[in-house]
Image 1 (cartoon, rainbow over the protein chains, first blue to last red):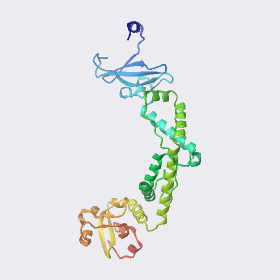
Image 2: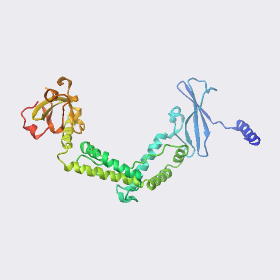
Image 3: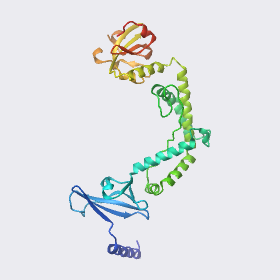
Amino acid sequence: MTQEKASKTQQSFKEWLVGAECSTFQYRRGNDRYTIILVRKNADFDYLYCQRQYNDDGIRRGDQFNYEGIYCKRDGKVYDWRYNVRDLGDIGAENGGGSQTLYNRLEEAIRGAVETDIGNDRRNLRVNEISDARWLERLAHFSKYTALDRARSLFLFGDEESGGNGDGYAFIFKCSYSPEEWTEDSLLAYILDPAGYTSAETADYMENHQEEMLVAFLEGDMIAAEYAALLANPRNNAHIIKRIIQAVTASPAKTVNVAILKNGVELTLKAGADQFRADCNDRYNNWNMAPADV
Amino acid sequence: MTLEDVFGRGTNYVPEDILSVTYRRAALYETQEGAEQEDTI
């Protein structure tokens, strides 16, 4: 800092000390005293800092002020509020929402907007094939390791959200957008203009995630194909397992008697019921037999 | 009698081996083969 600049700064500081308006607010809750100060961020926002004392001392010179939230001058609300101002209504401030609430609100709004734009119809995408090697690799992996398991799980347990109810499968496009973590600038920009911010983010997502959205449709195709193959094959053990799951799940049983015919020998054993409420994949094991019978 | 008594240690059974699953003498699940058995409890 040059000597001239330092001198100006010192003068400004002296003038502020003399002329500063009070930007301090104190209140009590129980035996605690809270001292809140406002620090200007820019023309639209002040930041709140607070020092809390566990008695009636006011403030103490050795203790810190901690960040407590953002005051938006445009709408008069406090955002991103923290513990010490958690009961904002008590001190006359309107809560605009915590940063996680704002994050969730943004995510929900953009996912909804994208899903509306796509309308569960891949023809509303600009692309109709995948060129990005990363997505091609993901599709190959999904086909090899995931599609069959997803189809089997939907067949056995259903999934109302994606359309599988055990009797068929219909793909429903779900946007997987998640916002970046808030930065200093992005949080303030969203607070200042939620609709504008959401609109811009939606447009950006639609512009730059076309192949990613197409991948979701193609993965749905793979699940549908595996699901159809499973339905068409009555020898697949999933049909037996599903009937057992549905029957045992509908009962309150903790243990059941299981009659089996194995290698021509018939045997009845007592077993824990929970294993019959899950997918055994290809076999049940005798570890789950009730102790009395083992 | 257990699976191990009949078939030896480490024996498992597959879904196709199951004739019936019964809770308090009521059949929750049974195959056609199982339904034809007398009382398997």
